[in-house]
Length: 310
Image (cartoon, rainbow, N blue to C red; front, side, top):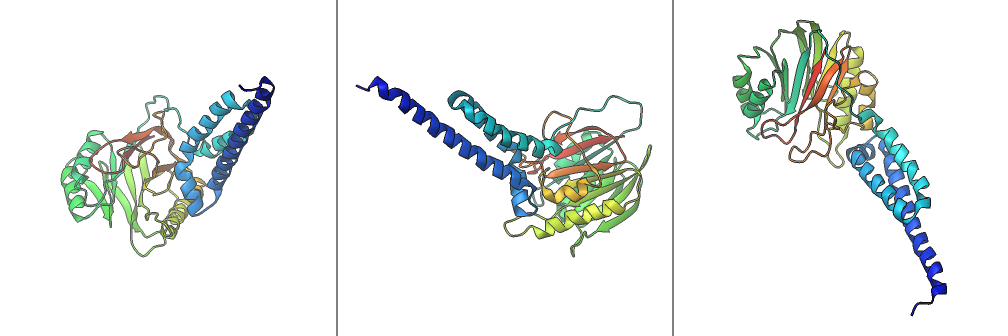
């Protein structure tokens, strides 16, 4: 039989152990969120999981509320830091209706050798987009996409594994190396009814353990290109291989606005089967984002991005 006199100290010790464990977990999460501002591999890794750390913090707060309320105040620190870190990636409301001319741009990584380019091109065209950008094209997928889009999108430009098709004429088309020895990006000017819009299409180098420098070089390069671009209206789309809050995007964010999703989500694009992170990005300058979201098309491992601007 347990002595009643010993129950209270036992309960206090149990509560203290729970509080200590919750506090340690909160400190660990706090450190993880703070590491999201560190450039390089660490910042990229944290940016990839940052949205999901919010669920961890919420679970800790709920647990503390029921088991160790005095720790709740401590857990507010990582919660507030997480909110601060997530601000650049939060969604926005759709823009109000207007009579101004609009331009719809869709973009998708169609995954080389997947055989999905024709299906993606067909479904993206059905979205009534004005401009279609595709990345990670191989020879066969480029031919397949071109065959589907040629009639409705007679103006096109291809550089390496990236290509763009447009309903409207293209001018000032040029390939971009962005600091590397091969071309995986392009710039064109779309002569839309509302005026010329400079459109960049980018397929950044992949991120692998110990292999991130090429991607960071390309992202720095695209930021420099945008900074020196004198176009009044500008849109940058493509597969950046960088989560929305990645420190490697800081230079580009300083030159253009990130197109916030307007569909109430965080706009996750990869992997398509169960999107966990947004690595396909859209940046704009000199235009207003009317709507921004994702589309499930073809058989790629990426969702497509859809952005309507005016």
